[in-house]
Image (cartoon, rainbow, N blue to C red; front, side):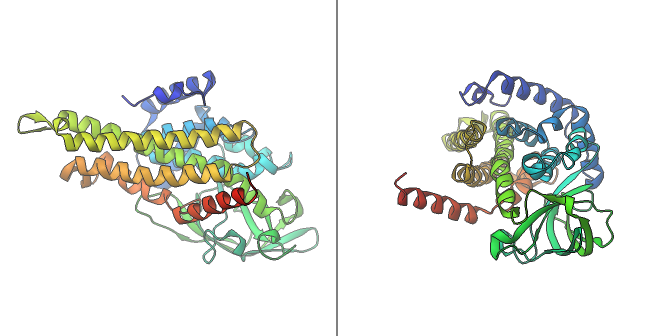
Length: 380
């Protein structure tokens, strides 16, 4: 039985507690799914999450505590279900926060599960350095022409709508980017490579060759792309941490079940003080992560304009802590911990990417340091 005492913390309201309980019951019946065909599994998960009403929380007015609770719960049951939910929110986050009424029609499609969304930001040469993006959107009459590549795009190849960031040239660097809504049926759009990873997810490299889009495809104003991207990541970075927390909670549950049922020299493994030390460390890591995550989410829901520092702290700590918790769970399982098909083995593969995407750990350290030093310089 997973620990649910954290739901009594003052970060949450009754509606959050009710949602967490209902989703846990749903997930216990619907998850995990068969991952042998990842594309089909993701399509099926989006449909099921839409039918269950869970995707209603992925667009429109974004309550970050709700997003975090959903991602934590889904990740504890099935990492691919968490991925499917998360991308529906991240892929349309810019539309939810900055889109016009015509663009927001996509939210009805993604929240119902009828359409799959994606967030096309990363490029082969830019990675975390978004300001160094080189993909162009050149004004051409009453529209734009897109040229360039995006890579490591989640849901790449199966998405029905992409939020895409390209250079429109209003100014050098970050101030010269804009955001657009793009569909894959446009001439010149190409999926050039599907990317395989240690924990299978639909990922792709995309190429845009003279892809024409109307002026109405732009989200917000020209040159607002970087601001839009950072605003979306400010919301969803905390949810990446929540997914890591879900993985860590599952690893702790599996470890506790293992050490209380496995016997060594006639006594349960948990009687050994060294084993108890591992369990204690894992429990502290889990609760520390949860406190940082739900602090950041609560602050955003209370109306904070930016939670850059808090979200970065949550993402950094939770993903690194989850790696340590899962590694300890693998160790406590002995040989079974590295056996293909075991839950802790799959968690070990799932967690690694979370320390990289949406801002790698070292990037988060830079963000936190700059925010901290900047606050001190201002006397805050």
